[in-house]
Image (cartoon, helix red, strand yellow):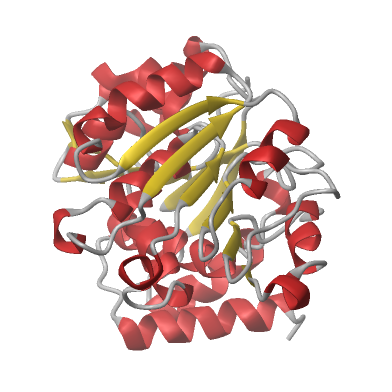
Length: 316
């Protein structure tokens, strides 16, 4: 890894795998203008999947000590960066501690902060398409494909005490590697009294097909694997069979989106609602930008920012 050069203006970073392909690089300058942030900049830091701990520590050390580096959004590396750098933060929020992940790095009054924003941003995105009282009315389950930070954050969101009586009847997390599943089970153990959790080792897409087919009607299936964005492909095969009247969420908004297209092929027959990751993208970024630049983004401003992002996508 090459450590970035010292920032010459207030700079926010995007720590990911292929940051140059993200819409945020063209959206951010227009968002910064709309928010009145002044002469600021967005830069990407691309790291390989599951990079060495020293790589994460070099990155965080630079962000912490470079005066004009304001903070960062972390995607893909949320768990690994936290594990490597936990001792480098002056303050860690409760979500980050519970999930042992970090998605937002920021500074305030000489302190360096780590936050986990996904329980908030994923919840806001889910509330856009999951009908009110959906779980209470239908008794469906949730299948989370992937055991990374997004799946853990959604599990935390679904089982909040305020949703008592309106939680999924069961939450299953499936993953290709057993160690990540063991880690998820440890972190989510305190939530097991609110719904039934299962952790399934599924090395192949065919394994996930079987899990999808076994779900009752009115369930939710989420692609939280990174396949379709950080790597090509899908966690399911073209032979996957969805339960009727269910919700399917591809949390990516860019990439080949094969998982979403597989679900769309059955949408009419099975009465599926298929959602992409656009709103998740909007909420995820605006939550972190508000933290990094210490600004308030209310509903009216959020809608304006969403409209700007749509215009950029449309080439306007």
